[in-house]
Length: 140
Image (cartoon, rainbow, N blue to C red; front, top):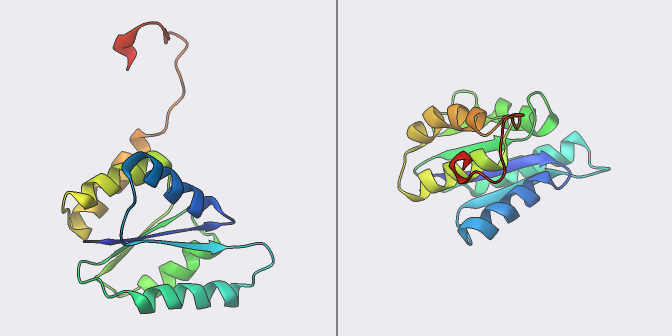
């Protein structure tokens, strides 16, 4: 099974994982890395190194980061260079994480998940149209 790491500023990662588990049930191989207020980049990098040092997952690691260019993203991106067993995603949203979790739990490989993640993430973003009728069940 592909290992999932969710990384963010503050407690967003913990909230995303909590929401996934509320909807899909307790998940294995889900790790949270947070850059908390007052922590330094050195402390964050130590957390990242510890998490990656624990990785004993032959199926690879998929890292879901909150923000392109943010410190959590940078820490994982640098460590992913040259690694075939690791992918780093940015702009993570709950819909994306839910669908990728289902895909992973169905046995998808790291490459299969990586090939779908961006498409699914984008599909989870939109603006409610003016013509939406909340009483029309066909809209759902």
